[in-house]
Length: 364
Image 1 (cartoon, rainbow, N blue to C red):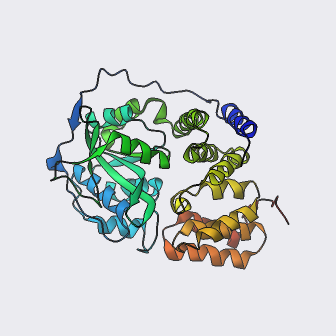
Image 2: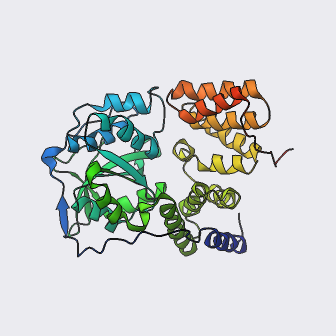
């Protein structure tokens, strides 16, 4: 286990490296929020998910608010061509909206980490559907990732109204999800959310987002929130993980690895790496190839159907000069998701001789 002195030192490192840079966007000075609100449910269509398909289905439900008429299948074919693919990331869902759905429907999307209830409520009141990524405990199946469409809230009952692709729609009035449950499980994914909006209203979305309008600033704020929670409860494994996640997105790979080690030491759900891959990025970028391979090999004991694992395995081989082995792993990743552009890019770089290797630091 990490010592208290070591943990305190890590938090001090995080405070130093995430000092905000650049111009900040001021938050909108809104008045008091209504105590309850719900989107126009006549514009929404609920759909139950097919096998392993909560991401595409939840996204599809949100898109119906803007007149999107397809069912979950087109989004699923784009986001996870192999139906066994275990994860769809928020940025992939945003890509589907902006690259595909927007050609048929007047809609755009963005994602940000580090949301809070007030921000989500302001987005809803402004008529913007919100999707959150969260943990989900299913009876006899343990913890897993899940997406949830938020369509309203009620402070009197301390609940969000939701459309859930797995649990239902609450008689089409919105299934009630307590604030406490959302707060607990949303934290498993750095309080990440997706906003759907008409493109002509993008400036309004950005004004409501305030400092989070800038993605890097959103990760900086997320790291600060996670530091506060780690300082208050050193046993909160997700707090340490979320600091590492934010630092990885900001490019502070060496610093991030320390936080990930604390999180793994404290204990995370066995499916955690199905959905959250930044530890692989941080350990790869710092040349800790053996750690990357150990994490990948351990994760593959649970399922093979996560393309990011083969991608990082391929990166390790590529940096070690094992070009044929690298291409084999990258092509394996493409078997699970033929639209995985990062894997295609590395193969192209290997073919062109432009791949930039990372030096291994943990040679045994």
